[in-house]
Image 1 (tube, rainbow, N blue to C red):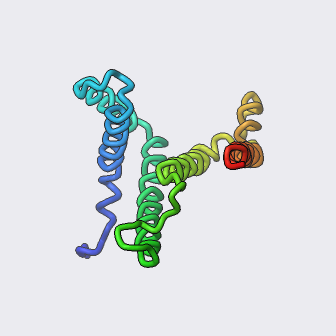
Image 2: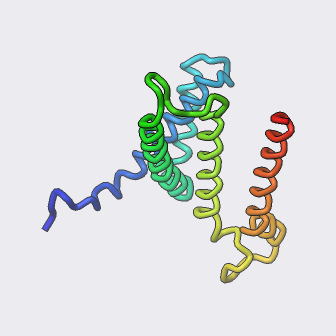
Image 3: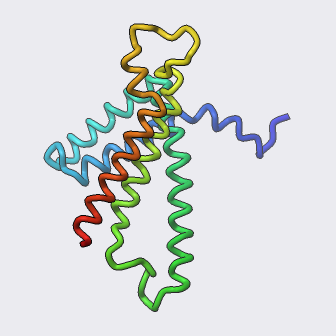
Amino acid sequence: MATFLDLGILEHLVPLFSFVFVFLIIYALLQKLKLLGGKSAIDFLVSLTVSLLVILSSSAIELARFMSVWGVVVIVILVFMFIMMSFWAKDGDLGLPEDMDVKGIVFWIFIIILAIGLTQVFGPVLTPYAEGADPSRTILRTIFHPRIVGALFLLIIIGNLAKLLKFKS
């Protein structure tokens, strides 16, 4: 018996949600960064084309699903953190340190979500331990091994920390 609480119908709407998600993200980025001259018609056409290509790939739909879910979770957590920090702040202040780069932090959080999403969706394809792994792709599998990706991630963090510490002192 079908009930109102049965959310299985939403599973059929995932390609539509992925299309809208990718279209809005690409269009917003193109409008903000003005990579193609800032003309809205061109940006609309490019974002429409990219989102149509995403619909054709089941892996891309899975990546968009993973990123949208975790992106919403991160946004909700950040909103609650800002609300919690505003309890201790003075009137009219958000309670953030003055030198805190919120845009940079949000950018890196979403880059981390992208990296985790890529390893979750494409990890089984690139792992060297998969059953029936193609030996001709050994180099690609070695580069995307979780230990190598983790080491590169740590090197990026350490490099950014060293840069920040250099400019602070």
